Length: 340
Image 1 (cartoon, rainbow, N blue to C red):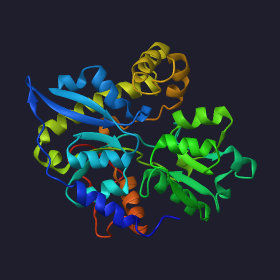
Image 2 (cartoon, rainbow, N blue to C red; image 1 turned 180 degrees about the horizontal axis):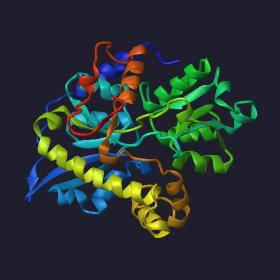
Image 3 (cartoon, rainbow, N blue to C red; image 1 turned 120 degrees about the horizontal axis):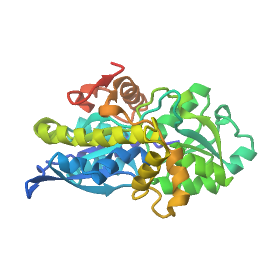
């Protein structure tokens, strides 16, 4: 189980990185910003906005910076290394918001009925030993990046719903979790479908459940920035969200509504492949990219009911201070709020 010092660790992260943030520089009439992302299809809104010139249309000169987990992105926002990012809510992000360093300003990917979502996985060794459904997770080891990560939250919600106890193993990076699952060093994990399905297809991992059955309407990822940008750079923040939302609309139209037919899907896969599964040939990457199609919230709308539940869990687990409010974490002035 996670050591009792985990809350102190998250506080130290927040305190060490809650520094003053410099305003983005102006260059050749455009505002320079850095945007953080993971190489997941769920981050496609940023990729599309970049590739199709939507950021440029808003007067933004964007540099994309890539990370391997949510918490380092939160730290990068606080330190000023990036200006905007899309990632899951983590204990570190909440602690940084409490220090006045960050704000969630919108929503990104979410679980939605009728659309394929995150999967619960078991290693082949655990599966052969009887872990064929989430109800059998008692006594098992569940992988996560860090304490207070989205993986920690989801795993805990599954365990609570099934009335079982399991341990969590922090492995820092998604790649390390995948390696541990495939070799049986951990028993279970949950992840988006574009990663889950190929892993299951390899035979080294098995899908044993669906996250939406345990965390319905889960706001998986959010759009966030520094508290300073949210409060003092409202024009730039609105411009970022407008460009990002155009990218999201294109993604949903092509991959979910399929308004452009097969040709539209193919064109979108070509674009996303520049950032996701770049180590694979296009023909091998395409099925995984398509399998990873999940809705991204139109207009960066934010499901506040889901965020409220996540914050309550962090507090119940003693990962963040009990007196942190939604107002501390969120700036709800930019986008439509769902589930209020």
